[in-house]
Image 1 (cartoon, rainbow, N blue to C red):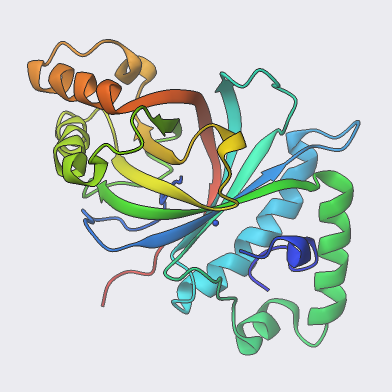
Image 2: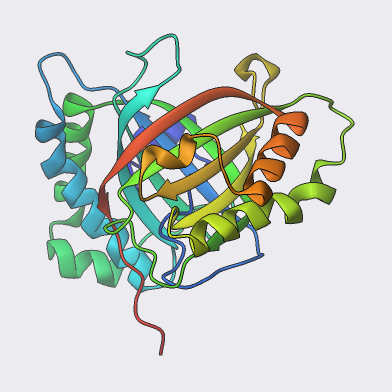
Length: 264
């Protein structure tokens, strides 16, 4: 019951953005992110969607507390190079340690809803579909990520996502991932970014999308998009541009998010 079970029957498997991965530097280890795109129903606004998403947050927080999920967050679109700006209005993300999603236990759900779990979940799904139905789902494999020691979506509210296409399908992009990651480390050290992650599209993977990778950066300011003056950052940007073409760039704002339990 981690997220929209009824809506997922047709596509049940995805910052990108492992934005809620941890509140400490994290490197290595694959995780998976479900990107769930929502289109507001006619006459509805983000404010109408908030009560529904707050309820999903509570459900997913229970799964995070039990270690079933790494995190959940809601991101509202701010800017996009998408030629169809009305495609969707906001995204919810579920970050999972496995390809399949794990939901909160029956005991945890009972704490939330008592003996009315089925009735309350049916009502939540109904309100969800009426307010902001799911129009698309992607599953990404997070190949590598790095986050600052004090990272939190609440502190770094803006997220920049570059959807990338390899210029040469035979290029050795895994061999250059470490040097590209160093760029993220530098941005984190300079307090320009809260984190960095690199992901590959898993489902649905199709050439019609035009991209197969995503570079995600929670940033403190959109100034990070300006041409870097740091020689190391400039060189890394040139390397990235040689390897990948930015097919689409989108900028989001963190609106809601779960938190990880404190390490014992």
